[in-house]
Image 1 (tube, one colour):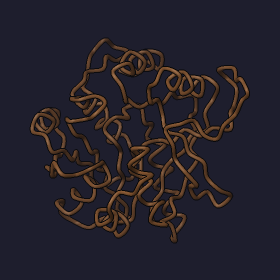
Image 2: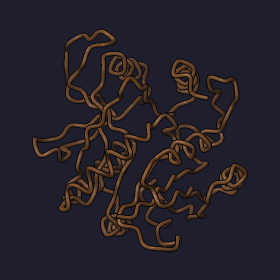
Image 3: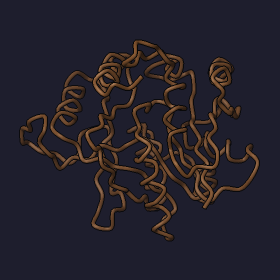
Length: 266
């Protein structure tokens, strides 16, 4: 089954304008833009036929082309990364069985997260959309809780049923747990990893739907599928000691740089 990875990136982020061009310093001391690091993460994934950056901004496009990325220009009217992916698919040559949305603010996404996601969707022929979830340890959960206490959005959490189909996603920490966890403790909270795998028909249908109240309240694009009754398969992935964090706020820059240093990632 052929696989296309789309890395959607926009300049006019509400929380962090210009985010894709923010530079992050790695363990070797060299700084690379967020979009470059996201592209590099996508290029590490095995079994992929093509990777493209999808953007509506010439500044991002120029920066991406400068490091050799394949760029697709999309409309400024796209409301989120899923809509941008849908438009990009219509502009690239060839047909693909699975389209992966590797969002441009997750440069620490390990290749095996995406590989396991694609394998999970392939193994479930009745599933049209899938996304990875990562069981948090106390360190990550405590970070989420600290962000919420400070009025910041840290990560997104997910709850799912016995069939592994999502019940809900939220920027609040769900499910509630009043327990205190040490950094290395396993917790019942799952971090939603901002990657999606779609079958093309589901992706095309998404763009024809208006956003619902839950999507608007949470600011989470995947809720449009749930509000329309489309199941979303949650594929549990393993951290394998690798740290994972998305760049959502300016305060995340030193955190991600510290993680790059700790992991020895250039």
